[in-house]
Amino acid sequence: MSEHRYEEQRPSYVVGVDYGTLSGRAVVVRVADGAELGSAVHPYPHGVVDERLPGSGRRLPPDWALQVPDDYRDVLRVAVPAAVAAAGVDPAHVVGIATDFTASTVVPCLDDGTPLSEVDGWAARPHAYVKLWKHHAAQPQADRINALAAERGESWLPRYGGLISSEWQFAKGLEVFEADREAYDATQRFVEASDWIVWQLCGTYVRNACAAGYKGMLQDGGHPSPEFLEALAPGFGSFVADKVEHPVGALGDRAGGLTAEAAAWTGLREGIAVAVGNVDAHVTAPAAQAVDPGQMVAIMGTSTCHVMSAEVLREVPGMCGVVDGGIVAGLWGYEAGQSGVGDVFGWFVDNAVPASYAEAAAAAGEGLHEHLTRLAAQQEVGEHGLVALDWLSGNRSVLVDHQLTGLVMGLTLATRPEDVYRALLEATAFGTRVIVETFREAGVGVDEFVVAGGLAKNPLLMQVYADVTRLPLSVADSEQGPALGSAIHAAVAAGLHPDVPTAAKSMGKVRRGVFQPDEAASAVYDELYAEYRALHDRLGRDDRAMRRLGAIRRAAAERRAAREEER
Image 1 (cartoon, one colour):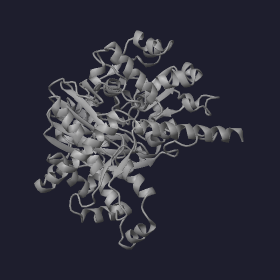
Image 2: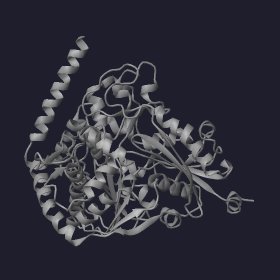
Image 3: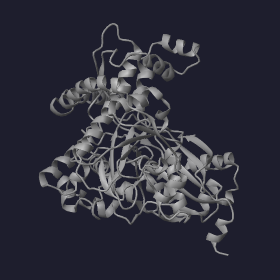
Image 4: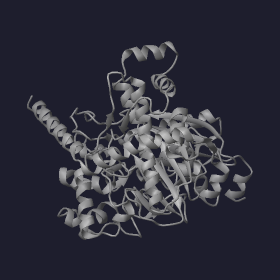
């Protein structure tokens, strides 16, 4: 009896593993209908390394964000078995596993996949560690890449909206090359974490088309030329050939079979299908049944990534990229994003709310976010008299500048915490409207806004987005959208569905049109948005004040670090 016939006669399950900024989560999904039967979350023991290096205690400069690669393996060792146990299914009935990752999160490693930070003698070297997506210290390198590409008229630059980000693979690679040549030379592969974790699972290194196209600047089968890279920095011309270039797998393809070692970690059967890797945002579109043209999916968490498919190829200013088959085969996949969303709300709650509010929230049996949301929801639109810029972690789209910073305008002695909190919620919605308008102006239609991620639980925030964008807002009906999306790809890799769109129809979940725009609120938001847009263009394009303040801050941090070293 064939394996396929055998699978038809018993329940089949797949595992999706979503690697986020602070934790990894696994979900067990029934292939027949997408039912999520069990899940587990494992926080990374080292979290985000942005102050001091593990072990050595070496202080990191501003704008750094690193991670420890063994934290990712721990998710396989802990979260996957726990999810299978929670689901109550026989591990022998799990037929495939797939993963998604933040991006561009890159792992410097050896030819066998060993991370450089795990090699003897390298644990105290910052550039040997994983560079998380929100590592923004490569902004000077990104600026030079953009300037040179524009000067030379490089054909790939418009595919990225005219600007590439400091978050991406090439900017980070150039940063290592220039800041620590020994670490660069010792790095044999500069690997996207989305591919590195698949390598750990099946023993085969396959680059995924999503990360390679959006974050690795692979367009029409080629990367930026050696001549271009050499013009950036003498000696950097071989970066692609030496450290990046490798076979690319299509999304939903089988990368290999689960190794014996990975089977021992996960408790799953050796040899089951391991899908080609994917990026957390893009893998979520099938989970929300949003793979048709005109459906923009916003994966809202610490940051927001906007993805959508279209039948047309257009050059959209400030987009993060357009890739043929970047989300599903046969359509152009577009990406944009905001570097700070949930992080912005979290910063405010952690740093700018008086103790009296925490006491009131506790007395009401509410969390502080919930308490501020309830108070903010009682206001009329515009009642707080504020407008904010949501750039506390820089701007990903459409300005593509991570040296931009936040702003709240309109503060008075009467301003209350809930006023600022609501203004920050609205600022992120205004940032999304800039993205939507930019796509439309470039000829890419946006007809529906679909939200996935934990922030979809905030009804005030969702209504604000519907009112600000004037779009019907649908909500992915899964608390683990990326993990469910990965599970859908695992089912395709295991041969139980012919392609991702077909699998999405059976396994994806969405609640359509849950929030509708309110015309009265939208009219006031149009006025506030005009003020936001004026600040956006002035401080984001014309005025360099934010960059000058950042330079002063970095210089002070360097002086402080130098004094500490002297001690």
